[in-house]
Image (cartoon, rainbow over all chains, first blue to last red; front, side, top):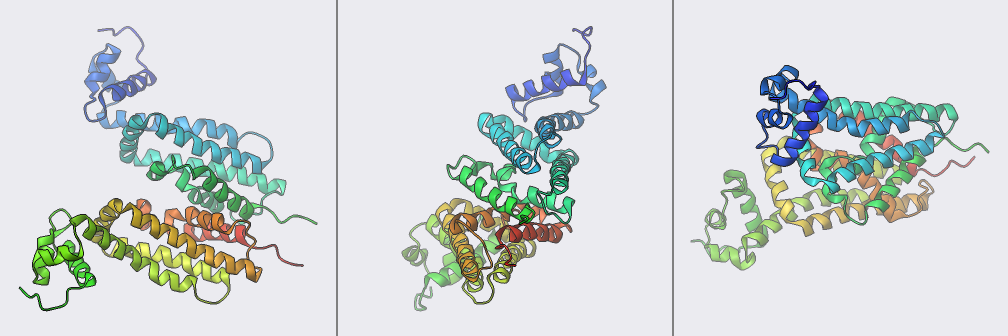
Length: 198
Length: 198
């Protein structure tokens, strides 16, 4: 056993992803993860005291990978209208890419996420906060006319759910999807925009 | 056997619903339906030549029960803005009522609908046509400013999917749902409305 290499949580999570990819969720065990890292399963349990806590950490890491690049867009500069459109399209593209490029791992993560309710809720709330951040900027700029920023941010999230919620992923490959995204965004941006000054 | 009573498709569908309710989808058979009607199973097959065609007819009947009262609203009179809001809220309420009042039958119908793709597609297209009908009226009235009526009708349907698609039904009981519906409708109606004349 190779107990000399420093065993970080990040290394364990990477190895777990690998093991999940090779064996599938039903068959993967903590012993497989330890074997892949060439350590004892006790070493893995020192970082993740249960299989459930390891699974939750894997789900959280997966959600964070969507979150981080979006946060960069939300907290970036430039006009709020263009930024919100870029943010929404990046969200749809990130979800689409995951489903279409690696449907098996997507199904695995989806099952993990179902048990990691707290992590999923935090993920969704974080995304709504990012939308609220862009909306606030837009109100300051005079581009958006929004009464309740938080409620409207959630409305933007809810109104685009068909294009980012995994329950609808089977419909994303439909060739009509890009036009349907455009139509929803047109309607929403018209709903957000401040009346033009004449 | 009681072969004297006139056996209509409607009577068979009613009996099938009853049988599904009593035995569940997995156990219900055409023989059970025939027994409930006190006829031979051959009599049932004369109207529905296969179990699949009977199942599809049950799914269609279920979808029609949402469709018909909505059509009355869509084709009714009165200002288009109020009519569209009434229509959308009636759609959400109809779906909510089905899930919450009879979750077992809802699950049964959902499984039936999954195999009845053509009937579901026709149902959805019909609902979008009803929205388009109200939008056209609103454009004539000068209340709505809509470029492409058909695409916008689909956008209204897509943007409210969280409140009418069964994939989201588990979230409908959340006490925050009514406020979230209001926030989405506010945004959409602002997106539809024609600029005020000054």
